Length: 487
Image (cartoon, rainbow, N blue to C red; front, side):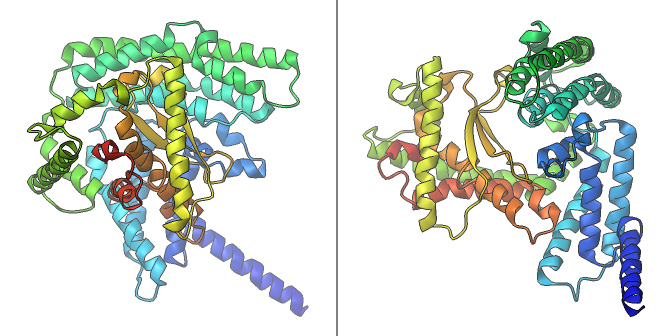
């Protein structure tokens, strides 16, 4: 009887705690932080796929869905943010553990920043030439969506079938922006139109959404050749009937929008552009510095960098260089600092990035007492998006393991890649830069989930810039004086 009473008490307490955690006021501030963030996570099936946690437990349903991009959904999310921001402020942190107190301060800043930004929720361009939905969604399907079993293969097709819904939801927001006078500059529209037309001009079986899927499907076990052909036929049909029509609506819309587009490309041209700019500065720097103060900091940095460049040029026999930027561009065209603009040249470039990172890895034990477990791969940016993509970027590893971090390099034109800048870029995006910091954060189990996942620009880019400088301290440029130009 005593055992039953104890067991019953434990169950009762557990139920009360669960109800409090899910619907009421969590007992601890950490409980509130975890609950709020988990609500975000579980409302985003694409984010769940990125994390790669649920698949370990045989849960795959989220991989058949795309995240809701409707205005109504955003209204609900902002209401949740406002509510939990007020709830968080009601907790006292005087007696909280030191780590939880810091986490609460960070989370409070994060939620307050989102609340401050709600008024500017339409001050962006969801379709843009760098990381717009028209290229990010296919990239997600090709590089993140897992194709490891029969279920995930069919989930892939289900997601393809939802492109039209996703695009129609985004179109709703695009038209609101148009009514507000928030229209992308002409060059942005022209580039995304060219990208979307190139993406849809080939037959479905030539589209990378199909070809990449086909390659991955070949490696999935326990699927007969007959079933594989049936799955591929469904994928091709879905691309024709859902994906391509979705892009056609975007192409038609942006074709018409060109008539309203201007060549102005600053946020100052947007409604309340000055206030939006001030908000972005606070959001990305976490400071209250004015635009003028930050600009002046930039001017000081430019002067410092140009002085360092002049020193390198002087030491390498170029004499006094009055215009370092012009000399740098001239040097970048020198054949000794270029790869051939061929398939062989691209392979050599990727191999050189791998060599640079392996060289850095070998020195890490002398400088760090901890290293991430997640591996880092070097890959080419998918060709369908490289014309408008940046020179490089980092894609984090899966939080649940199973997918490494990736340093993506843009190889669209090998003349754009100067060998003397490769070390700096590899250190910044890879090791000891973004991969090092983000993978370590993901693997720090005692932190609340949001601190293992959320990006904060000042910290992310601040560390990556420090990683560039650290390469100097570690002696990575000792035999590469021109490499200092990149750092």
